[in-house]
Length: 567
Ligand code: ATP
Ligand code: MG
Image 1 (cartoon, rainbow, N blue to C red):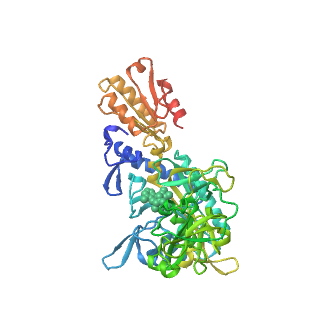
Image 2: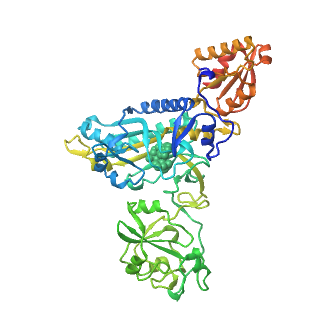
Image 3: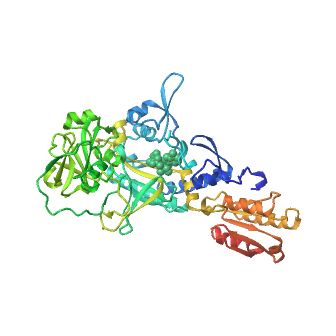
């Protein structure tokens, strides 16, 4: 392609409303333009990158036997009512009515649509396994669209769905996806780490996210350098630094704490206790039933863990009156000593603690000398707090670290969730009807693009991995008036194109400084400059965008050298 015939509206300055580096650079390099909050148009260069990412995805999906399909984005609500997601998903789902007043929605993933095909067309175990996928727009009314195409409201996802006869089959389909995903990310120039993730409320048995560590990420990952354990903070389990307790503690003692309501107030109160010597008691209403959640005073409740433990997102803090009616006191004086009529979840950091202080279930009174093992009954032990940097690894004891990361892919064992709710069954070998065992798997195409920029850029602009660069090489003649120089540049460009390179000729009548700046900003992996000094020696200059290295290559070797560097 010739630059003069391409629409590449580069910007000189950083746009003021963009924060993430990838967002700034995609705007400045003329890749995207904003149409509204969280919605972006892709210009020619971005689309070239997108096509390359998609073709890598297609190749790798093909390698695991997945078949490309396409289901509509506009979907009838009835399907979503069958699966239960019409109710369970909140405002993230775009809902609308058609002219006949029928409820419709814009799909944010396509489990329902693919399951509806499976339930009609799959009848026998002989038709299994199947893996179906599509690369298509998804719409999500994200609560906080941000960072450009990293989190937008309309984006492209490769989503696939596996259909197996049994759970061993699902394990195989899941492992195939895991391998395909690792290859896809590697080929796109990303270092993606598979991490254990929360299965959330969909009730799946296993879920793995592919995470690229970068400060632009919105997720926190707990990583153990000792044994390689890696998990999303929502899911991670680790051991906090131990706290020395007295060997034995005396009998429980009730003491007055007038107007003391919070952990901090009790810490400041004379005769109170430091936060790490307190038991924090939270009461939640879960699907309308109260339950207690105990944490060390200085720890916070992680709500995703509550959802995982209880299997629902439908929870809220209990109202003060509900606490009083159930426990005899208002929040600020609550505790679990003697509580047997409500479920009590306890964070693992409280295990075997002694000499603790907690609310007495009597307003303005607390209890001291609480021995958790001795005085609290029927506890459901779980990790309720978020892991922290510096915790010990639960398997090897090494110190764990927290990293910020971007989720680029997510693979998920759905199990029977959709096949049961939507009635997708097949006859097994014994002629018995069984629900199909399903998995679902997603990759964000634009998110790969933006994450590649987050991982590969410098002060001058993007440094595309060759595999997904909008062009592999740009040829920059610098003396547009000089017919001989221009002819040489044209020759190099033509040779590269006919050898199969994705080459761009910068035939604009611009100063070299402008051309080089644009080339660096857009981030073509290789720039070839047949400048007057090089040409005088029968050479052209090669500039490597990744290393900054500049070398002169004999004109006759240009194509071979390009092949050596780019292939
Ligand atoms: P997140 O936690 O970042 O919102 P998610 O868990 O909602 O992601 P999935 O539903 O698993 O994501 O979607 C699969 C993939 O689609 C993600 O791994 C990501 O690459 C991409 N994706 C999800 N939401 C967005 C979005 N708003 N904008 C761009 N890509 C997205
Ligand atoms: Mg999301």
